[in-house]
Image 1 (cartoon, rainbow, N blue to C red):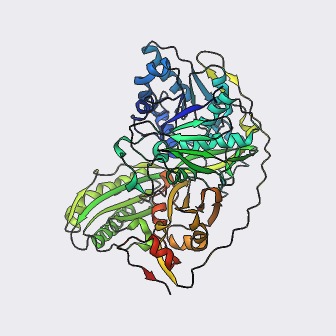
Image 2: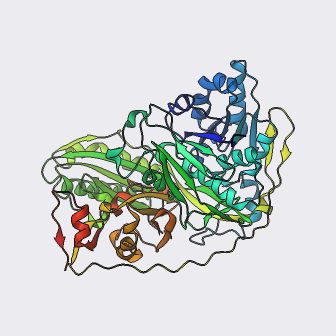
Image 3: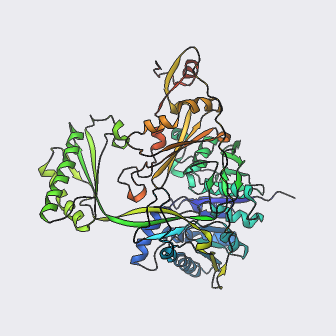
Length: 604
């Protein structure tokens, strides 16, 4: 009897991903489509949309992208699992059922609810504190959603659902729920739950695992038709990652491992609602052209708590962008920003407004994203980006009205105000905390017009932190001297965000470089490399099976997400910036890895 294999296609990596994913995946043998839409920023945007329209609150792309393909999905009995319900799962369910009815289809649409923690906030207010800062709950929240797990998804599929819609859940739980249903995995089968979560984690960002945003971008063909990932999953938890034929992209261990460690803190303890996953001994094996086999995840009992991501409004923001061309463009841009702020403050005093709560100036084209280590002062074409925050919306309007004067009052070479006067937008901040699963209660599932049913979730945790193994000895340069090279020559990288923290995964291009990276790329050196950008602790974790190190940089993103005033609020460029770090390597190695035109510098 042939081994059972379940093929899951990653059909969406975020709200705004391409509609080409579904038709592309339907050219392959897929049994499920997994569609991920949610991030902390997305939840707050959709909460604001629902405040204006009670039928809104879910990504409209979810139904719009599915509708043209529902007939084929129904014909082939492909099932769909998505967190596209966001802050209005019932609204998404009604919209999708209406689309099915219009097409004459009778698909069973299930909805999972129970992630909304706002009804419990008053009871929690006295005890809840922000996970990193310890601050108390803000007075008024926009959203507060617990990351639910895979059990309600599996339960909906067990009862015959064709499409399962959730609100906030762990992104990886979308795939894990499918695999628990298909293979009958128990809630305490932790190694397999970790493996299924890893499959979901690799699929959840769509083409990020098939060559998207890969360090070696120049080796990735066919960006315009990049392949979306498919995981062929087996009952033991191992799976093979591949993509449809005749698509672009690249699936090699290096592109996959970047996604394995994306947005992960400690790879030995990736905390999920169903399991604590250990990815440190995961193995990646090239088993064919654009095919990588993934195995080796380990799991431990989860904690007794859910992670909750809440958002709240903290004043208003305006963002002005002005293009300036010519000699001394950087200095002109900086003085323009100073003059605009001074003029606004003068008007604030006249009208008895308080000062800005924060301001942030970036001169794009001068390497301002590098902070104090920028070195492009001679740029002759720049874009001034001036961000201002204020408690009062009217103050942002006052600032915006003055922007029109820059072209006739300030620097010669001011060529345009991009997007016109900025409109005040809410400053939305993230507030993360943990709450007992028993306090939130059990999630509910409704299929079609049937009565909702409760899904019991184990509320008792058993996780105990594992001892961190001692680091292996590090090698030093040989007797022939040390040569300075950029880290990119022996490593690839991927960076991501968790609130105001960033993670940077540094992965050796060859296992023989691991000891060298361990010695050269220390937490202290990483902190120094990002001086002026990162203001918190830097912690290094190791993933030996992946020949990789994961760095967690706290207080690194200027507030993170929508709260950040930076051009890179999620640290997407941090991985590339880290690879510019200069490291010392033995002379023989430097000569072997350096391109022919490189100039090698002997270190003191």
